[in-house]
Structures are given as C-alpha cells and as structure tokens.
Image (cartoon, rainbow, N blue to C red; front, side, top):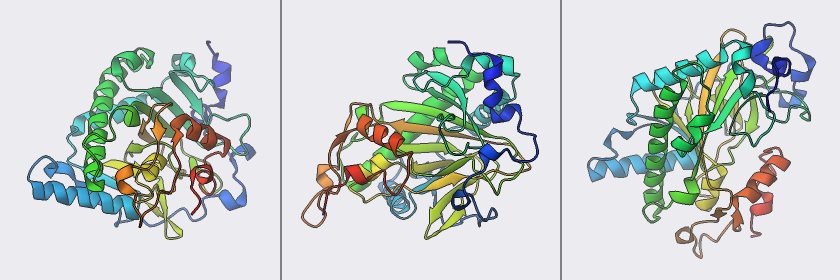
Length: 349
C-alpha cells in the first residue's frame, strides 16, 4: 500500500533541526544516556583475519582471539577481512545519499508493516505504542538470497542495488567465515552454523540526525541482539557503546573494520560460553551518523538448543530447545529487556 508524504513526517530526518527536543523523544530519567563522553575502549579486540586461511598456527590464534573476545566482551572488530575498502566506502556513501533524497523519492518505501520486504520507518517500529521515540530513522530489507530480495530494494540512488548487493554478498561470506572459526573453536562439526541457523540475512541502515539534546534521548536504547551474529559497518562517527563491568564504553570507529557482536542465539547454542553484550547508540548535536547492521538469523522454524558437544556433567544444559520464532515473539513482547528476555528459555538449575 502506498503511503503519502504526509505520513513520512514521522521521520526524524524530515524535521530534526527543531529546538528544543520534542517531549515524545525524551526518555525517562533512569533510561537517559547519562554521561555522554564515555571513554573509547582500547581493550575491545581488533582481530586481523588475514591469516585465517593460512598457516595452522595463524588460524588457531585467530580462533582463540575470537573466542576470548566473545566470552569477555561479546564484541570484537575484524580487519583484513577481504572486503575491499572502496566497496565499503561506496556502500556507506550510498546509504547516506538515500537518506538525503527528497521525501517524494522515498515515500513508496515508507511502511509501518513489519512484514514488508523493504521498508523505511522511524524509531522502533512500535511508534504508536512506545513510551519514548528513538532518535533514528531506519531502512530495513532482506539480503539473502540476493536474487529474490534485490527486486524490493530502493531504486534510488541509482547505484544502490549495485553497491549494496556486492557488499551484502561479501559481508555474508565474512560472517559465515567467522561462524566457521567460532565453530572450530567450540569443537563443533564443520558447517555447524550454516543452512537453517544462518539462513536469513537482514540489513538495517540506521540514520541518526544531529540531535537538539543528546543527553535526553537515545538512537537505540540498551539491548542485546536477538539473532545469531551481527556484522556492523560503524561509519566514522562515534555512537556505539557497550556495557561492561557496570559502565558504558565507546567502540572506536576504525577505517574499514567490521564490528562483530554475539547475538542471543549464539549464546544459547554455546550453552552460555559466549556472551551477547548489552549495547546502545547515543546521538550527538553536531554530526549525522549512519551505521549499517547485517543481522544473520535462523529461519523462523529452526530448532535452537545448546550444542550437544558442549553439554556434559560439569557443564549441564542451561537452555531448553525452542523454535526461533518463539524467541522472536517473546523478544518483542518483552521489548528486548535484557533482564527478562531469556527467562522463559532457561532450564532450572
């Protein structure tokens, strides 16, 4: 269904240069970002994947670095991952160009229907029911299989499908490579995370315009990702923060690096060995920020459970088996609240 330009007035990017911050974007005091100038963390590992296909020693070292990072932080960055720097720059540029298009060029993509294959929307998708709106607009669409998904993508900018198609294909290859390395490190059989466990690739482009008062709102509040693993193109503007040891730390944007974070499903399949980390996106008053998340997700009917090879007398099964669609329904009902979202899936000790 076509939605006119009037409905698009909800998009932050269509009116963000207002003063002061509108009341419906002001978070409750206990949910506000607090101190904005958090330290950029130098401890979140940056892993060089250049040796992943080389000598056994190099591969073993990379695997161990990924496991250590996934256990301690739930986050790491990778460099020398094989995706050309120019392709990453072209892709991020075309996303920026998309959000700068006139409203009439984006109106056909605006939708509040979560089942639409490609849609432009704002905040969380629950705009009419949420307590406070998020300071962001989102373009979201499927990426795999490419030949089935690309027909739904934006036709403007004219290079969108070319650059995003090439980038999404290569990011998927990197994600599957990382999952294979993690699988080896956990002692699981080759290809454990392929097929149903990583069947869906979903792209979410987040656009955060300059904000009148970043201390009162958030681009994305504290959450953990519900999927298997996420690959993030962070761009060159600070905004991503990870919660560790009781405080927020910033993830420094590195040129051409990919940010990798562990999702709930990988935590569950590893029987709690790997941790998904709470993270959020803050805003700023000076620069627009564009970030791009590739979510790798099981199929809805996929059975999720801890890998049998990781369960023994000293490490009993911590989570029950369930279908991924059950988890997503619960995640939506609990609004992704990290203190309660896992409870229905835990086994009693």
